[in-house]
Length: 220
Image 1 (cartoon, rainbow, N blue to C red):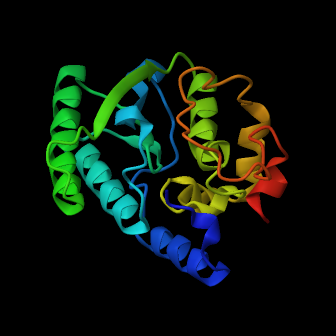
Image 2: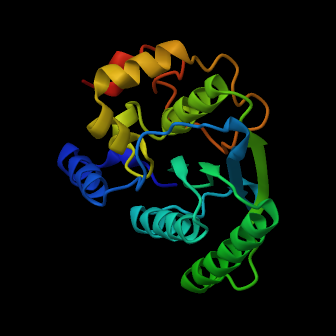
């Protein structure tokens, strides 16, 4: 399992800086005129194995995922890629085309990772589900949920320390107070209960709780 918190502060800072320089997301601030057109799409590795287990593989798959979404001409409002699953908040124009293209992405990346790991025939991707955004409040609570996911699953203790998400872009372009206000106005409550508990082991029980103080978690 890739444990980002074991990197040195300099290594962590270098990765986060590199992600910011890449210019993701490619959209402006989300303004969902039709909230129902946005969906939270979640896909997990088979049996929740940590197959995206290195920084290089996480970055590679993140790029493959974002490139696929860009080719679909769907506005990606937020994302987070973790070692055994990912979330994207994306505008989907035509669901059948989207799911077919996502299946092609999973097939292509599975083949590549199995070849690298000498695991021919291994099943990489298993579960994929989507949830339609019902309102602006649902949309922004979902964005909060995506960004806190690395803390929820115990990979880091601070939101900015996970580079494979859209969080750093929002923090850089919108600022700390905007993020705090978003968290305060659109709390998670029991968001993700029973469908996003993709953990084989919790790395460190001292990690921050998703319900903890956001200002502390932001590390600012």
